[in-house]
Length: 183
Image (cartoon, rainbow, N blue to C red):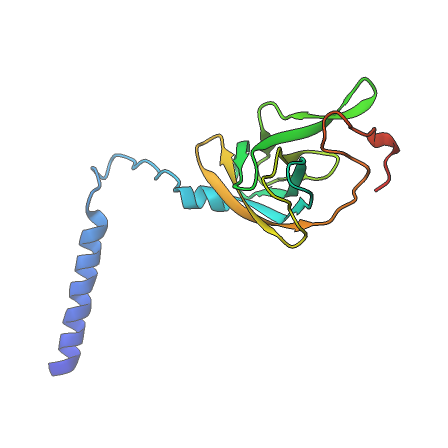
């Protein structure tokens, strides 16, 4: 009777305690419990950025950050703004105006469709570093925080790379037409 009985009693006591804790805090069994609100960690892990990078450049001159935003949820996610200690940031897009490709702030932010992705790339949507305080050298790691419409944030780090690009300029007064640019 000794040790085996004690082990069985301990297991039974643990099972009763576990069941008792599971029932704590609930309402009546007839009422459906509301789904728990997603935590900031869960929401942040639902949006990721693949292959983030920044175009290296001198201090004070506009440059941009790129990568692929990936949404693993069943709902669209809207990025309303972004921040970095390296520079003030704006969400930008490239669009055709008067037969020329021009850069402008992205009204309404970037929408990443449910179970989809959204590319940030040279000549397209990007995170514009408006006036970096210091030069961004190849190999530098810059930190960013994306702000979502639901109030959550998504931090990420991007590596600076040299990039001659497709002839695009991030100076709004000197935009090159994209149709003549070579990759």
